[in-house]
Image (cartoon, rainbow, N blue to C red; front, top):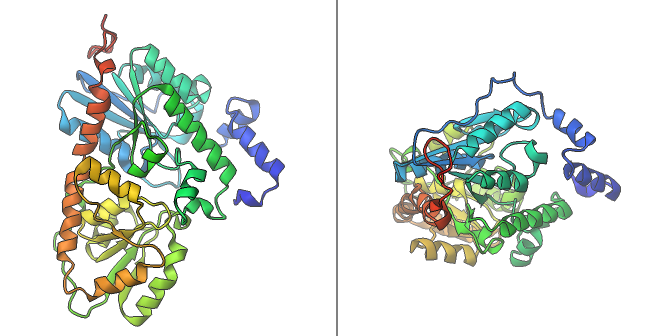
Length: 415
């Protein structure tokens, strides 16, 4: 549904309903999300006995919640970290420590109370994308849920993933290619939600993190917690260089074509393929388990051309030795260098310059040097160590993590 085509009064009604989840209509809308699983059949989070117990919830976008949890446990054996995620029918399937059916998350007060009790037994809770970790508990208010945890001695932090805090007006002003300028995006609501979420994080006074460095423009007080990929899973066992004169093998795997700028670059790709310069594959509907093989057989992966940043897909491609190409802002490149000391190896291109770049890559006798640069970058920046360091240094080891109210391993506050 393109909301830009709806009458203004209809859009106002939709927004009012979304902003009143506990109203009679809001409760009715929630029931349409599905009935909860049988009472008691969905467990709450359980931690291993540990001095520090961390819950990351509730969205697990691109499998990052569980990746950050494992990174923390790998970095420090005194940490038990768990993630919880909402299972959305028809969505991408990513592993999670606890996957909760959407109907249970929204419509099962028993599970909501049990999950809150489990989280209250943690020492730290990282709230993803400003979404309430406990469904409709406490009026489905992330602020009230976070406050309730804090009152029980739990250290709360926030982690922004992307569109939840990327302010459209700011993004458009700083990026002429911004996907927010696409006619499919309903700007008033996107602006309202991002502004609200920025306010929630900024006014909370709690530690804040962002998964991609472009979001530091919207949350300058936050710290970058890099996305995590498993270099071993994505490594190509036998990457073969192109034969002399062979077409450049190019893939593009857009999760949302409008956001990635797919329509902007397809004419160039079709023309180069017709000339025999490239061999192009548009990857859609391929399960995540099959993507390592896709990247292992490609020379170039076209990432995104409208966001000004890079994310999980680019890291996965580079880990496989595939060259990542995309439109990345100077702010992102500077932030990456400041945090890691390394230059971001995503090759810069926009829809206008892409043809020249692909022709120049196709003319190179070997791409091995560029490929190794990407592999080394992912192993250094995105294998989980920098993410764990950011969370530990700026949250888990921060002063309030050692206050008199910190809990012992049994879950009782220390006094």
